[in-house]
Structures are given as structure tokens and as C-alpha cells.
Length: 99
Image 1: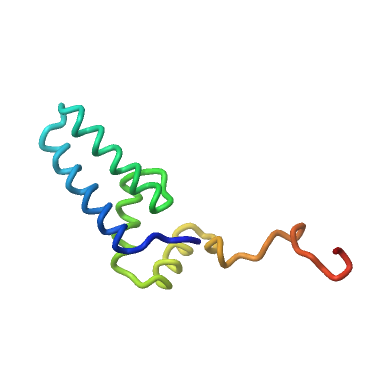
Image 2: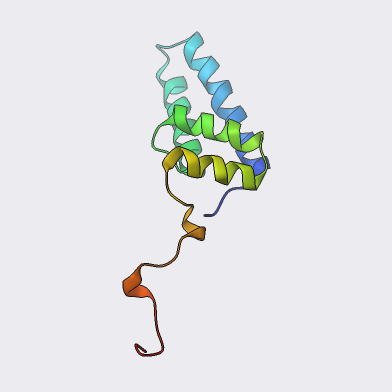
């Protein structure tokens, strides 16, 4: 599993929170809302989430933990091993008999 640099996550999380405050202050401003949604989308892509709130929560956890503890926590949350730690499917494995 590839994870972004913590500095980039922190920067995007600050941007998301700032636009969230601006959007809550003026919800009828379409430009502010569009920029807020763009910042949420960017955070979703960085953190591999589908929902901006989940991405913000994941970013907070990522920033306040070590890499190993974050991966273990994510493994516990999803119930699956991170992609980089799983074995390939049985069909994809090569044996000496199957070259």
C-alpha cells in the first residue's frame, strides 16, 4: 500500500478544514462550495476513501500515528491485510512444476 507523505496529508487536511469553515460561514456561495468539494475530493484520493469525512478522519489518524500502527489500525478496521502484505492469489503463484 502506498501512502502519501505526511507533510502533504497535513497540507491537504488544513486546506480541507479551512474551506469547510468558509463553506459553513457562507453556504450559499457556489465558488466556496465548489472549492470545498474539490479539497474533499483531493483528500479522498490521497487517503483512498470514498467519503470526505472518512478521508479527513483517516488523515487525522495517519498524522497522529506511526506508519506501522496506522497500517495495523486500518487492517483492524477493514478486516483485510494491506495490499502490500497479502500473498498473491493461488492461481498467480508459480511453482517449479508450473513455469
